[in-house]
Image 1 (cartoon, rainbow, N blue to C red):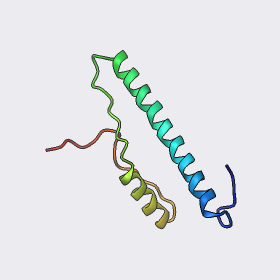
Image 2: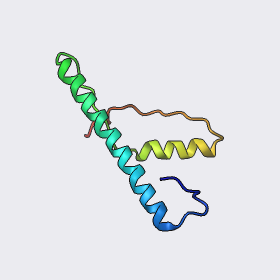
Image 3: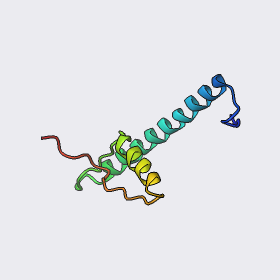
Image 4: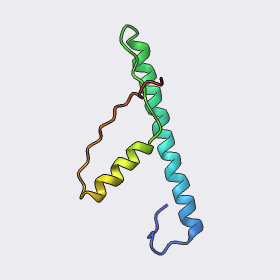
Amino acid sequence: MWADIRTAPRNHMELAFKQRRQQIVSDCRQLQIDVDSYNENHPKEKPVQMVFNFTMDLQELEMAAKRGGQLNLSFSIEPEPLI
C-alpha cells in the first residue's frame, strides 16, 4: 500500500503503518525461529539470546541522526544480566 505520506489521508496511513509493523513482527518471529534452531543444533555452546526490545536501538539511531549520521551501536544482542 503506497501513498505520499505528505498528502495521504489518516486512515490510509494508519493501515499502512499497521501493515508495516506486522511485517516487522513477522521478521522478528522468523529471527527467533532461526536462533532457536541454531541453539538446538549447537547444544554444547552458550545459547544465543535475542532481545526484541528495540527502544535503545531507536534512541541510538535518533541520536546518530542528530550527530550527522554517525552510528555507533554499543549494545549486544544479549541482554545485560538482571541483578
